[in-house]
Image 1: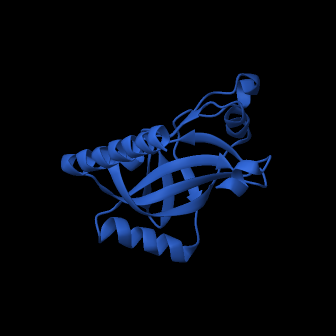
Image 2: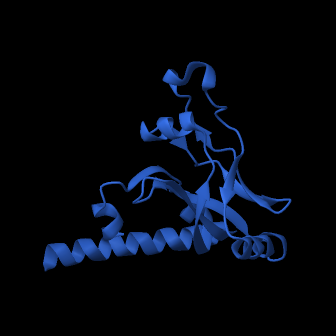
Length: 158
């Protein structure tokens, strides 16, 4: 992560922070995304959201559903639909793995982070995840609180 943070082209566009709370992410995968020009310009201005979106395998293709990209004011007549389905780019081998995870194992494909990579291309990190139950969420929260408390104790008492 440090290498990506020091890279001048790397920039987080949108992050789904709640995903790791609501889901137990078992594996993550970097995928490409097909965008229109006005969408990329809008993303550079920071106008996108993936919090309530999900990825789905349909007819042998991977789609990002319900993601929001704000309209780009300067695009005028050549703008884009804000909540359109966007095609995701993965290899055939990865596609079969994702299909098996969703159809056979009952997993969910959750978008975690959308970002510009070191080459300036928009990439999406999706997680192959299982939904968390309430007791799992409580356990995670208790663990996080204990880590915070432990750090506080070590800092104060040396």
